[in-house]
Image 1 (cartoon, rainbow, N blue to C red):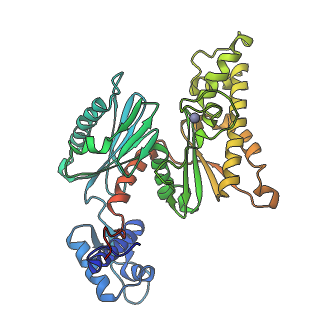
Image 2: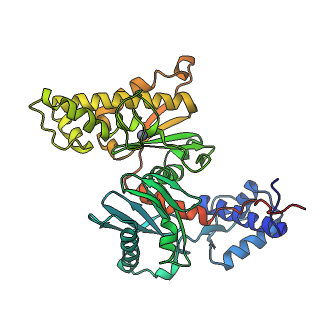
Image 3: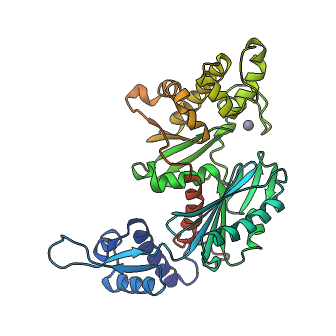
Length: 405
Ligand SMILES: [Zn+2]
């Protein structure tokens, strides 16, 4: 049984306050009239909330709206400089850091290599020093740091604040938020996986401006998926929804690092170049491929390297079937393809479209758009900041009572 938590009047006040603040945050500058159109509150309640938000420094009033005729209303702005946020993306050999304002606008960035020591302790120490340095670099006060959003590859538990498994980093059960919390005691710290972070940026600045139900697929060193349902990311029972890369595409196919065989990630990402490329290399003695990484294979494919063209063609074939399966499973408005592999999207997206568009829904004239993400590379860091900001401004939720008498 779910009931209002203790002190329900206080909770309702808090909910109203966050509802109003979030309308302002997403639509500023905005008038009081427009807020009350979107969220029905008594005039005096709304005034009380606005005065309260003003006195806490979260919002301020500016000028007057123009060309409305009649009485002119003051507009309310969200104070995006109320505090600072740190966004972190942990990559294979380095961490990317950004300092942003409360609107996730990037003020300063830093890249720090951690070389061969990718132990969690070493990475957390590097983060601690890096965060102090990035504040110094732009002359901002670290005491205004309100939140840190961390993005990592692998399976992440948002609830526990831990990275359950990242094969890229060789980490398992790393309580990353607790570890960093020891260094930054009064700061709220959150973790999610890379693709969910990127999807927060799509929701805020990209495809989410036009769509409420869409999927984001990342292609490159691996395959990622984020599922957006009614503007919310779907996490599954334990936070692991979206492990699309580990769905089976070839029964008893290549061994996968997850312990299964024939996973899509082994066929529709860089892993395929390694797996299939090593099998075929003897047949193509003139091939210039040496390392089988995504960028190398794609670049020599552009130079008409036969083996590279075969590998990219087959990889896109499997990716197309993977995307088709997603369309048939979710019936999304659209699928957004993102990730470092999309730098070379011109080599494979036509083929992906061709295969994926032969889906169940196209047969009944219900087409699904498949589009390349239009966001910049910085959007991973924007997404990390949004992870923290969205949590900080999340409306209070109903909590389950421990005992019911
Ligand atoms: Zn797998």
